[in-house]
Length: 582
Image (cartoon, rainbow, N blue to C red; front, side, top):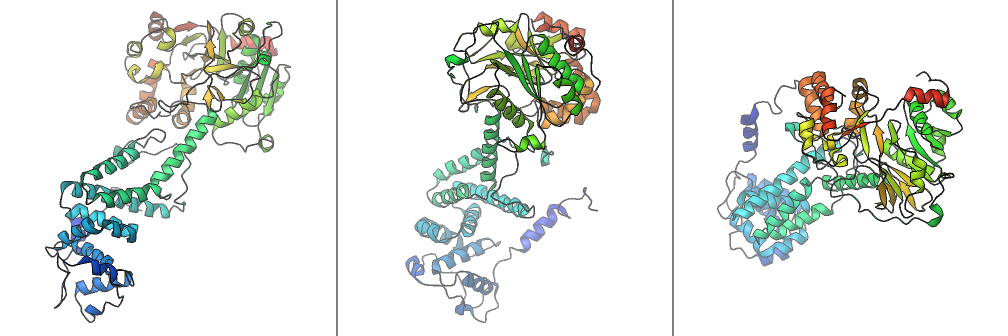
C-alpha cells in the first residue's frame, strides 16, 4: 500500500535536479570531431544525403560520436541539414556547448525555416521550439519557446497516461458524467460549455508569435498542427462541448449566458386556435419517478383545477401507481419500461432531462388537447381564477403561456416565494432577505428560475424542452404570462427531501454550476459541506428555504410572498376518494 503522504519524487527537488543534471553532461570529442563552423554553407547540406553508418566517426568512443551515429541512423538517406539541426539541438540540451552552437541553430531558422518546416516531423519541431526557449536571442523567442515547450511537455505526460486508460485519443469522454472529484492544487474544473482557458492560452501564444520573425514560422506551424490534430485534449473538449450543446438544445434547458439560441416568433396556424371556453381542453405531460402519494397529490391538484387529461409517464415500473391512477378517466398512464422504449425512435437516454423532453414532445404531437403544460411531479399550476377562459381569450398569435416559478417555503403548504424580478424588485434586496447567502443566490432560489410553459398544441415542427417550445432550435418569443398564474414548485418541502436529493442535484440537477458563475450555489453547498458538515448545510437551508417568521416577513415586505393553499389531501379525497399509501 503506497504512502500517500510521501512526496511524488523521493528526495524532493534536490533529487529532481540531480537526476536532471545527470543527463546534461557536455559531449566529449576525439580528434577531428566538431560541429561545422557558424558560417558553414547551408546550401550543399540540403543536397547531401546522410549515410546511416556515420563513417566519419567510425571507431570513435566519444559521446559526440555516439550521438552522431544515433542521429545518422534516424536521418539515413535524408538531407544532411536535417542531421545538423538535430546535432545542434542535442548539443544545446547539455550544460555547455560550443559557443557557436546557439547562433548556428538560430541561423538555420532565420534562413531556412520554410525548408525545415516542410521536412521535419512534429517531434523535431517541438524540440526546436524548446531550444528557442533555452537559447533564443530575444525575449520573445525565449518566452514563446518556453511557453509552447511546457504546453507540449504536459500534453506528452497526460496523453501517455491516457493510453493506459484504454480510451481512444480521438474519442471524447461522456460529458454527462458530471461527478468531478476535486482537482489538484484546489483548481476549479474547466467550464465545459463556456470555458475560455483553451482559446485564451492558444490565442495568446499565436499573438505572441507576431513579436519575432525568426520564431514566428515555427511557432505558428506547430500551433496549426495542434488544432488540426484530432487526438488532443483540445479536440476532445471541443467535441464534448458540441455534444453537450446538442443535448441541451434537445432538452431546451438551462441556456447559458451568451450561448442561448435567439428566440423567434413561432407561427400559429389558425386550426390550432381554440376560442370556445366550453370546449377548450388543457392538460399536462410529465415523466415522474416518485412515491404514489406524491403523484396522486400532483394529479389531484391539476384535475381539481380543471385539467381535462394528465399524461403521466412513469420513468420506471410502478405497478401500484399505474393501477391507482389509471382508475381515473382523466389520467393516461404510460410505463416507460424497456419494452416501451424499444418501440420508440430513440433508445432510452441516460440523462433524465433528455427523457423528459422526449416524452413531452411525443405526447405533444399526438394529444387531442388544445393546450399542454410540461410540468414535473413537484410543480403545481396556481391560478386565482379558472384557467380555461384565460386560455380561450389568448391572442391568436400566442404560442405559449409562461408560468413564472414560485418556490414553496419548507415546512409550509401554502407559502411560496418569488424572485425579485417577478415581484418588480431590484436584485439587491436578496442580501437583505438572505443576509448570509443572498449575494450568491440567483433570484433567491435553489431550483430553476426559468419557469415552465403551457403550450398551444397543433403547431407543426415544434418540440418541447423543459422550459421552452422550440422550432428549429429557437425558443418561442411569442409567449406571455397571465395575471396571477404561476408555477408553485415544491422543490425542497422539508429538510429530509433536501438532503435526499442533494448529491444528484449538485451533479445533474438545478444545483450544478453554471459556466458563467464565479461562486454559485454548488460552490456554496460544497464549501458548507466540507467545512461545517451537516450543520453548515442546515444553516443554509434554514435561512434560504424554511418558512420561518423572519423569512416570511422579509419576503412579504418586498412583495415576494405568495399565499396559495395546496390542500393536497383534500383534493386527493375529492378526486380519488381516498389517500393512497406509499
